[in-house]
Amino acid sequence: MKKGRIIILSGPSGVGKGTVLREVMRRRPELRFSISATTRPIRPSETDGVNYHFISREAFEKLIADDALLEYVTYANNYYGTPEKPLDEANAQGISVVLEIEAQGALKVFERRDDVISIFIAPPSYAELERRLVGRGDTAPEIMQERLRIARWECEVAKKYQYIVVNDNIERAADQIDAILTAEGCRAEYQSMILFEEEK
Ligand code: 5GP
Image (cartoon, rainbow, N blue to C red; front, side, top):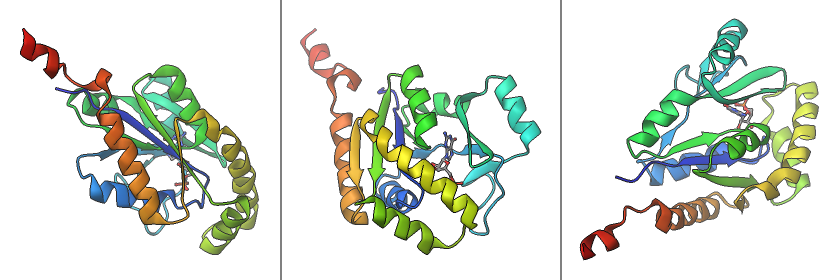
């Protein structure tokens, strides 16, 4: 059986990552979404245990102390982290897992793991990103400024990813991610050696 892969999807806040990701997951129901732990407050549209595990700072710090996280960051004054065990268990069962994480955490995963497919979702332009962020209107102005600053930095680290997909159109971005995943699935190093086994 093929081992599942870690698929990292990053992109600045407001780039439409969530929407693109939903479309990719709809097309590929075999993928699993990695549910991060976070200390940020839950939003009305969210469900605990589905979008995130919403936990206290104490509980998060216990996860850090127990070395239970593949990576974690402090982002806009809250902790976010990827629980490692569910990820490894899914991969061992041949299930690929999507991590929707910001770039600092992604860079840590690149250092620790070599079984990663990394995709950066970029806005068509920085001006467009700013317009989308403001348009969303669910975030306080000072948090918005912080997010824009982070977004600018994130666009600079995009080149450390294996792939960059520009989200100027959701369907097209999803098509491109689909194509990346198809090609990655054909990589010789991740195929069971069917060709050679037949010759034995
Ligand atoms: P939001 O608060 O809007 O849900 O997420 C803020 C940022 O944190 C997004 O860029 C999101 O991708 C990122 N994020 C969510 N979970 C994790 C995680 O487990 N680790 C890291 N490093 N970033 C995360």
